[in-house]
Image (cartoon, rainbow, N blue to C red; front, side, top):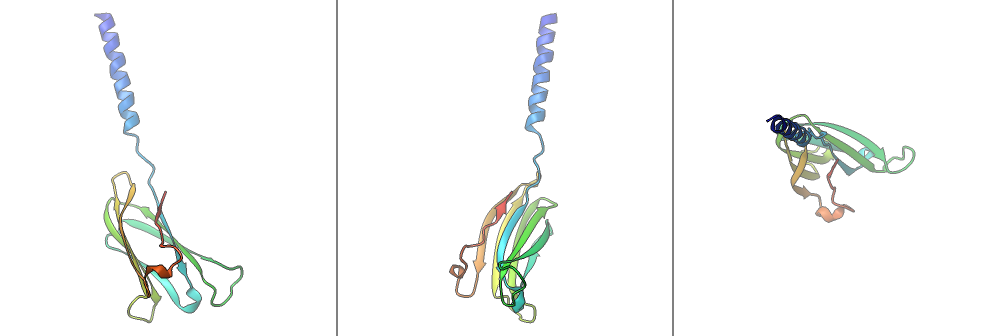
Length: 142
């Protein structure tokens, strides 16, 4: 009887450890996208979300050293989830005084309860089509 109780106690302890290890919460992911930009010509990216799921930061990096007028670069956007759910994140590129954006990129994303991000689909429109970009902007999920 004592041996049976010991074996049962060990089995329950092992099961509890395995369950705890399998339920370990994952680190939240972030999504990063680099978009070509040229703010010296009046163009800039604006970001909109269908649901306020992400905190979004933006950082501009010039493709050339120095502040050369007319030289382009890249805007790097980092999306950090603060809630779970489905969301469309729209990147609109244009001039603030013009009604319609010149470009529109839409990433449809899903964030689960562990703050893991999954890209569901991508839709883009640029003047002359997406082939105008050297590479279609990929969302990098880390």
